[in-house]
Length: 462
Image (tube, rainbow, N blue to C red; front, top):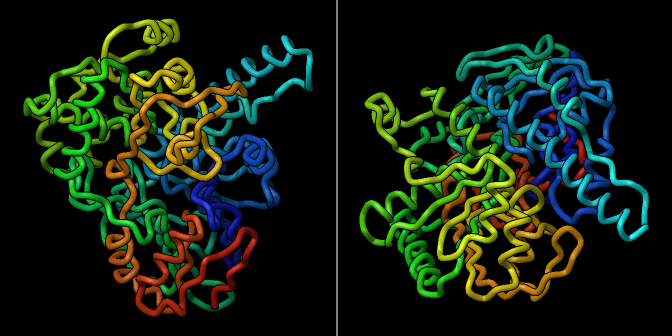
């Protein structure tokens, strides 16, 4: 048995880990790389392995950097099953269709500009809505803590990861040429003791571990410290009379930030402001998540059964129509717009940034990890000028970073999960830039058995 790392190796996005044995090949995740547009195009259009030779996919969760390349895989010849938790299966429908729609609309927008300027060949979307629809036929829902066989001789089980609704760590056991072995793939690990979702379960024991390391060496602030910081940002924005624009992942981060706003408004710490959730995907995802009570912690589940509003959504206006989204750009006064994508690479958030980024009275609040090469990362780095849809814009809006909203485990929680798994035969750190991966490695017991693979590296599992 061997693993080849084809994505999220010394980078944070594009997770793809190919597990190959005598019984066949299983792909752990198939996500899109997110970064500089030209690099992303090159990486995402050509998968680095034979799609038709993959027998099955096991998907850790629905975020696009883990699932978003599935339509490319299927279009290129994959004809097997894609196994995921039942919540992830339900979330993949709107997420993959939304990703396809965004790519189609962005290509249409760019082609209009190219035609106007009489330059370049037409831009083609990475995949179409039809490609995404065909991919959905391959999805198979599985229960947590219940084994299934994606290929003969390989048993897989999902375990609660606490990252977003439906997210799972993946344990794999096999018999290959008369030898038995086991591996755990952490997927994206969530944070313990957070509201709404269940806590991540301790990773099961295994011989080998593929571990995410997004926040290696970093500690998240506690919830009260985070809310105090958020309170100060909101009061400052109110004083300056500008808008507050929050790029957020449609699944997970949008719900968390609205919950925090609800708590601050309810307690009277901040004057209540209008909230607009301008991501149709986030609206649909919220409905799907509510239909899966198994993902919630006990307090949230009880509140929902009693008819409560634990997410604070009653305070928010849901913006579904594109024309209503455009009207926000002319709306006066201070209000909050939460819109996808979380790394500012596509979707309606780009239009909101175009209309706010050049005015110093406005505030842009970054609440999640920003991968290298993304517009979000350039904003975090406070560069004086950025490009949106290929046009330059000077950055005068106030940019504030609140990483405490991250749905990823911090350093201490990651270390605890590695210790829980044991992995005496080796640990590979993925889904982290090199600095964060090295920081996590340095904090682990027995760092000599830890590797930080490069893309294309093959790990032979004894």
